[in-house]
Image (cartoon, rainbow, N blue to C red; front, side):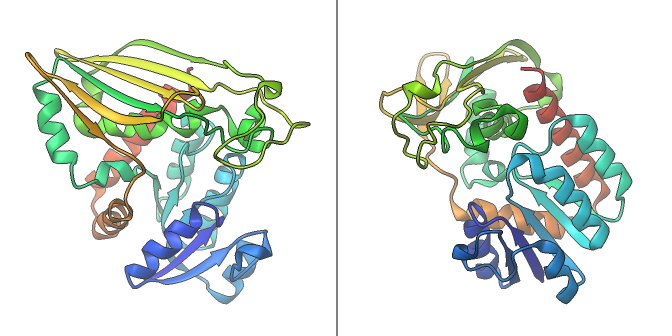
Length: 294
């Protein structure tokens, strides 16, 4: 297998995971300090005309252009990091226009080892709360991450897609009803003097949401999804199940590399399984719709 990784931020993780899987990994990044094989993916395609998997880890505003371009040049499966593209119409058109390439918005958390256990708990729960409250982890405040025109949104495009991915795998999301949803900007750039996720660009732009909450009703279970970039309180990344007479809480933390490996292998194993890709398209469309309506 030959894999192309574009963008060496989170792309460093993909390089490790794909190498562990035995793939030949070609890397691309504009920054030579990340030691990429190429500084642009078009040069990579001159030497390597086809890739079994492509992993797009660029800034959000480049996802659509890059995905379309690599599909046209030759790609088996294109994995697009969250939040996918700007809206569901763009995503569906891309899938339609390139029927010989498979597209998947990264949903790595669906492939954690404990998902079956979580699904069993969710089926018996009155409430399921998925929380991602950071102490102080706004990604590079003042840069493209916090510029709506480039990132399309803030925490709603950064953390909420992961949480919606959990919701999709824990229950039949198509049967659920959205009860509530909002995304607020609670901080201003002048309020932020530091972040655990990169330096602050004080003369930059900060016009995105940094708090988001969604609530769904699915059969008799209420799902509450809450995400904060900055609370200045202890970080809480967890899932809680409210059962009839008790509550169970699991710490989640960052997704393990094993889940990424399972996601990639599952997609490759199902490359000719039309039902699998129809399901991926349905999920990716639905997730896009949830975040673009906030």
